[in-house]
Length: 128
Image (tube, rainbow, N blue to C red):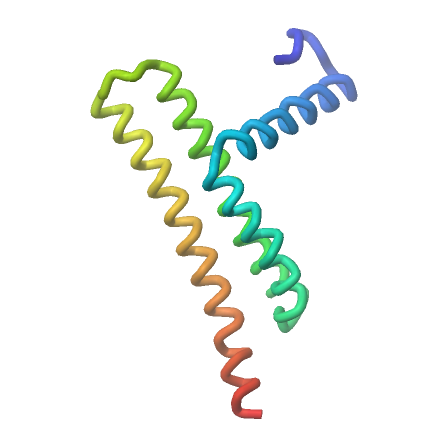
């Protein structure tokens, strides 16, 4: 964590460093993050190739990154809950379940975006 009073470019550089450490921790400790990152790596070129326009491409790629963002937040929630203790508590379980629900919702949303954009393109292609 940055020292109190750090401002300007020094604060931005430190914040970037902490964010980078977050990416490393997520990659090292979270299988779901690695899987979703692989999906982004594979599907981003597909979005670039298949999107009918710039806006649609941005929506396709943005929906993928939203899944990764939600996964990072879910992983952070899980880490805090696990840090507090190993004892079962219904609120801890609820927090983890809600985080998982958020990830699932973001994945379903990404699927809907991809379907809404690409299915009409596919139908148009089939009709020739």
